[in-house]
Image (cartoon, rainbow, N blue to C red; front, side, top):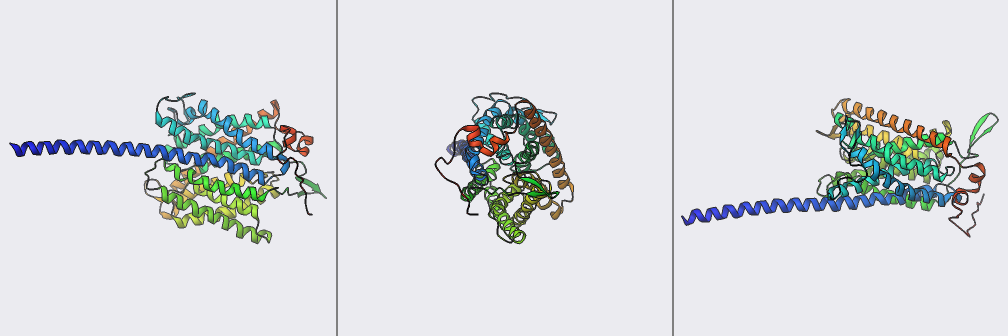
Length: 438
């Protein structure tokens, strides 16, 4: 009788201990995930500073205040718009796989997971919006840029984001974009392309000489600042990609960090060597954009490719960004002051296709080179076309509407004066004299 009683007590104690351990582990996992997403979301937020520094450094000094203001205010306006409308369209209850439709203006208040997830996602929305700033730099009205940023954060980005990350039709087909080569970067890149076309080039950029178009370079005024921005963006990408594991206890965190690092490094190397051969000198701005191109390209496949494949992807991205910048500028005569379209749109497309070529994780994405055939590549291509079409068409309509209502571009006089004085009555470098030694 005593033995039975002892065994029963031991059983009850063991069961209670197991239940307590399970509950404790679940609580620790929840807390770890909370810390992880807030921390990595903060790193992604810090990328706003990186974008501001890159764009400022690669453009002229007379527009510095304007650029800094755009990169600050697109997040401020965009975050409110995403809370009001964007979150509901992206992560609300699915309607026919096309759109989310719930949780507008407030979301499920009181749910800690909502606050965690909303914070992590709003910084991605801000990244997509701020990409456009660089392509439209030095000639856009400030108020018009703010109107655009509200619409991309509230509608354009969330709708296509729902198709992929919100349980929409592309995710149901097996489209894979781990951290946003298409969801974030291509959407921003397509919008940037439409904005640059709608605006037209900066005054004096393309001049006809003897029947031929001469392309004039407008060198950036502060390469050290641009380089600092690249380092900040690279640092922030460790929130962008590893953070997209969405769990602080995921075993994929280190793998994603490694592939991200290698692709960025290879992108810089590829752009450096290729630009050295092309221009006969190692070009600093191309090398910086090569780094960013490698980061953009690895963003979609970072969790499904090997370290070796990530190096190949980065090298190709570095070469691709140089070719793209030259083609867009010298052949298409589209003025993109910082190469935003080449970095984000072109390499966002390439990185998305890379999943269907080098992907090698069973049940997630198996690419062409690993026996997966053309199925995954076809799904990726379909996503690129549909998301690109959505972002391009909606952005074009938006910019045209802004153009015919409040106006999109500043006057030639204001452009020549510089947007710091024309738009803000404030010089970034008051008291400094800028000169050229040529």
